[in-house]
Image 1 (spheres, protein in one colour):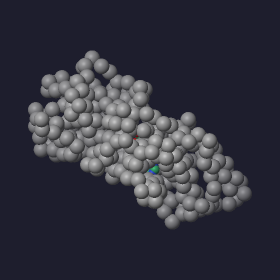
Image 2 (image 1 turned 30 degrees about the horizontal axis):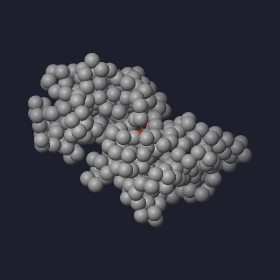
Image 3 (image 1 turned 180 degrees about the vertical axis):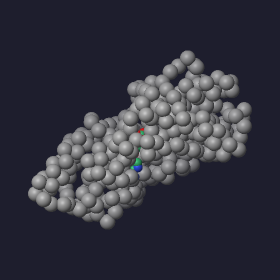
Image 4 (image 1 turned 135 degrees about the vertical axis):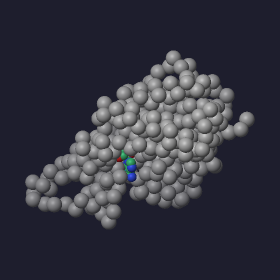
Length: 337
Ligand code: KG4
Ligand code: ZN
């Protein structure tokens, strides 16, 4: 069988993503970001996000199909994020994809958003193969996953409070750096001293889990104390120190998992993996230990339709049957569930 042509939809949060892939080759991948819509609220407003997906999804689908140079009849299957995510946004993509599949008479695959992030390195690199440890860090999730084989996942650790991206977002908002916070702190850190302030690295006794709420309190206390003392700490220094604290923990825990599992391959996915300092630190450490590192280009780390389509491509390859059109979204879906 030739490589399947899959149309993929992603609408779990604040990006509408539609893509066409052929096997693991991206034919088109288009995105309607809602950053401007949510920026004035300082975060994602679910109802506003759902409405923005409704407006974007039809023209974006047209664009993805046109850019791929295909006719809708050529499509072998349709993939759509089923969960986890915000229920309203998920329902927009899922209903649209379901209708499209029904109208065209094509099979529909509901996909786990986090499995989509796991597959991003597979889309970027032809030679990324399990067994691997994959660090997933986004606005809603932070997990270390032992990918034993495709489709066989063990979540070794996760966050006990905020996700890493959420910590970036909340702290950037507190510092007045805007939304989304990850890219804002990444930019602001340039030229800053990562050792200027030693913020806490939590959960040293739990090798694969994360906690970022203590960091948040510590930064807030630090900035309030400075303000009360009439001091104005350097923003690049504070941003670089916050970033270093988050990156330190993500890197440490990833390599704890590499050591414990004995795998020689590391992958990464989720918006936080677009962070320049995190990419640099992972690369240094992987190099030092002689393990392979597969972190996709930033556009494939953040949410997109291609990663969702690629999971369906693998299912088709493995002969896994499509979903029943009577299924629905599953906002609380878990990778190991
Ligand atoms: O994977 P993603 O696009 O959406 C979710 O599934 O949540 O991740 C979005 C998160 C946001 O919290 C954003 O601040 C963070 O990824 N992010 C970054 C960077 N780019 C995006 N965090 C740190 N550094 C970045 N360069
Ligand atoms: Zn995501």
